[in-house]
Length: 163
Length: 284
Image (tube, rainbow over all chains, first blue to last red; front, side, top):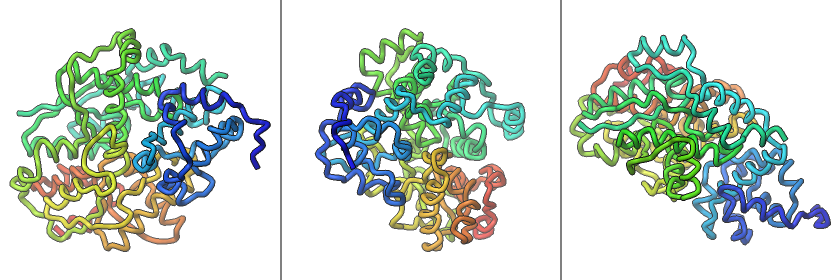
């Protein structure tokens, strides 16, 4: 049940401001995205059309606190089918980015952020891996890419998720 | 000899060295050279859901390293391909370019970013590969798994057809193997939701493994290390969950092509596949 008295009319404008969120207002609710979605096909709790509709109505809390927002596999099947030319997966990603800023960052993403901050790669190159690479005749790689931590500082990403 | 900058990303150099080995050996066989980018980081894709701008800056830095060498980029992972391509289009925007430059990064030469398989299709071509095939893989039935970001979103790639993809099937066919046409071809592996809901991811992977079995495939061909995590590394988990047996070998495309080019199973890294492809080797 949607109670519009709880609606935040500014929510949709905030999403449009996010990277990738700009197509949101063009949605006329046809549901092609949901019909094309491989996640929706297997699990009805994830519904891209519903997320976009709720966003347009301003149901901020429902959208941002929903665990199903994170079910989007970012496969872009929806983007290819949208008759309005909306980059649907990018809009959903913009909502995720905004959810993070509002303190809804999934733990798994924080773990990945820390790994990348430490070595610049998701899987650190351990001595074991380096030896295996050597045995297979594969070239050496730098163990640590410190530019990544520098990028994180410039975008203040840790301050964002600390909220 | 044509040269390309090889972008490895995170997963391939640590978890899928056999993919890398096969790709390098195929390159030698077909007469092109990979230049290694030792200082590249993660492409940025894993952080896109957290903050798109940060992930785009990571991707742009990687593209910049290749641009400084004036070399086109070849990737081995679908998501790396999409992420780096996204950064390239982003670099055309003034504000983003400014942040990129403020970090001390440069992008002096316009270059292409493509998946290894696309580069094979476009730069080497089916005819050329056909001439190089020494051991046609006549008895193999193969299901091709394109994965999502090899072709989608089409506004970044503009290649093949998202609704009716055919390039990988053509590349399978040229090895002498039979590409199987199947309804589930375009489905996502589920890898992106593995960290969110494992049961859902396993269900997604099952759809295609089940289709492979129903179509009597000898193996699946993958072109993305993340998809292979779902179909090969997690295959036992899928079998347990759905109380069935697949035992389906999952080969990276360069491994299949390598066999057709007459490389040894060792040169194709086949001993590192988790589902042992003995059934395939005995059919050759």
